[in-house]
Length: 211
Image (tube, rainbow, N blue to C red; front, side, top):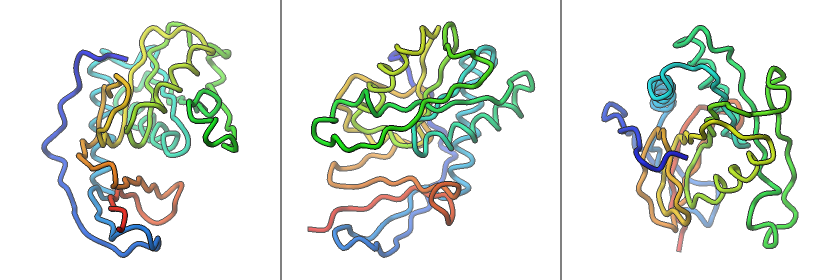
């Protein structure tokens, strides 16, 4: 991870705030902070930033962290193909379940599957790996992802793209590409909803826990 700098967040991203009733009695009304168009613009900007920082897309590998990080990686791959025709559009899935540090508390977590593009022949050696996740919070999921990468090879560099950074880090981890910095309190919940996964329309909503 590159701790030295973070790409500046574009001021052109509007915030479409609205409220909606929650179906969870323990959660207060939701407020939409990013709509479908906002998410699309954020992903397009991140794709351009990835190309600019890496001076192209050579040896680039996107690895999405389940669940929504995989779909975001897919969308980024599509955009990168449009920006850099030489990019083959491949992306993968990195399951971090067995590398998490909370398994003792939640031992019944379902184990997923790590899937690498077939062209890699099972190794990520010398690749520019961009981890993709929906929400960056404590940093513990990304720490688990870094441990998982160690079993796959030795990438040349590892970067992190997050659609939302909500703060409250517990580990010294910082995103290289951020769609939206979203200051929150620990009692609030941030949820990314993607049409391909959740149905409906794309959105990022924030809600407070009801007293």
